[in-house]
Image (cartoon, rainbow, N blue to C red):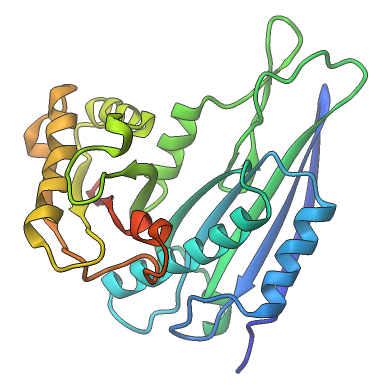
Length: 279
């Protein structure tokens, strides 16, 4: 069954001093496929042109064909394909994504499981709203906002966003966790905020067990991929996370996110991913 062109859309809105709107949409894929076709790319382009968007969240799924490791990698690639297409159109929009693989399915048909769910959201101020401090973030397709003491919309803090995404997934790709070429140094010599959030989360929830997985681009270099995973583990330990909550390993260049055509593609593949082993 060819389902690549099938798209579903749901529209929601809430009132909380201002109008909070989001659009939920799904793209469906053939089995084993992670690339968007021309019709899907055109739909993304059209949707972003007619829809205001403060932030976008993506969740990737697969059917049950293949093992869990393969399906998590495939779900990640599908999210990356959608993210990259969105970034071509709007480089400033905030995009978060997580891969759920074959997990979290209801009684869906097999073709319905092979999808990426997109939530595009924005908040519209009404005449009573003086200021929006920050764009709110959708968590599991629910927008949460509260009224602050000054009467403004109080958005969900980034730290909470990260925690909610992390705790609802089996694997998370920290978008800003990247490395200098041929090195285990963080890109621009700076640890991303998400690592600080992760350290706090692990300390607050001592039952969490994670595996830190290092990746490289371009050539087979198992040692470097291990060193990158160790770098993250060392950072987390320096922030007070017990060693017993973490393991690490390196995958060399065996699981690329994208095909390496440009330098930007190579940069995306120089990464560390965080897997949840126990909750």
